[in-house]
Length: 299
Image 1 (tube, rainbow, N blue to C red):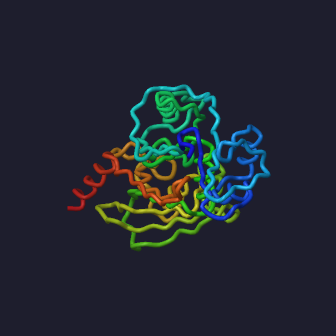
Image 2: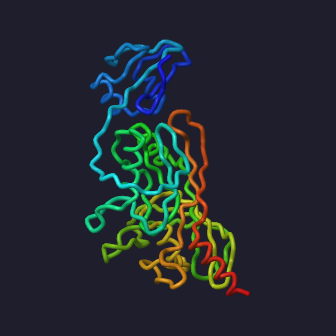
Image 3: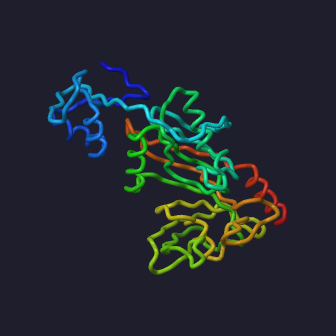
C-alpha cells in the first residue's frame, strides 16, 4: 500500500468498482482539480498512471501526487500559535494588530510571511492560501490550507454552511434580549470604506447570545451564518450595541486599542477523513482586561 504524506493524497475504494472520475468526486475533489491532475499524470491506481477512463477496483488505492508550488511570499521568521495541523491544514490563533496578508502600505511582517517561513522550515513547497480572512485588529482562529485539496474542501464546506464560526465581542450598552438572530442585508456604504445595512445588499445573518452583562457593556457570543465583510461589526452597530474600540463603526477606546472582537471557535470536517473537529482560541489578554474593568465599574 502506498504511503500517504504531505505530497500525496490517497483514497482506498471500500465499495464496488466504479469509474475513476465518479470515485474521486465522491471523495470531494472538484472536476477542475481532477482534470488538472490527470493532465500532469499525477493520478495513479495501485502505481499505474491513469488517463481518466479507468475503473477503480474494490480495495484499490488511488494516489494523487501534489506538485511542488512556488511561493512569491517573502518568508519571515515569526512566532506562530498553532492550534491544529495535519497534512492539509494549518490553523493558527492570530494575535490582534497583525495583518493577515501584505498590502502596499505594509508589504511584510504579516501572518502570511510567518507562514511562508514555517512552510520553508518544514520543507513544504507551497503557495500561501488563506481561507477565512480576519481584520488586522480582530484576533482568533484563522486557517491556512497547505494544498489545493485542503483549500477546495474547506471552501466547499463554507459554501454549504458546514463550517461553524463562533466569535466573542464586547459591546457598548446592556443588551436586553438574551439571544436572537440578526437578518439584515449588507452592502457598501457611500463612503466606499464601511459596510452598511441596505435593502439591495447581500443576505447577512448573525445569531447572538448574551454571555454576561457588565457595567456599561455586554459580552456576546456570535455565530456567523453568512460571511459578509464586517458583518458582526455592522449588525451590532445597527442594533445600537457597537463593539467597543471599533473606530469604524463606533469610537476608539482608551481601555482597548482595537475592536473587542475575537474569532473564538471554529468547527469543520477534516478534508481526508470528514471527521468533525472543533477548535477554540482563548480570549486574548486585552479583552480579558476590558471585561475585568467593566466588572469593577459595575460594583
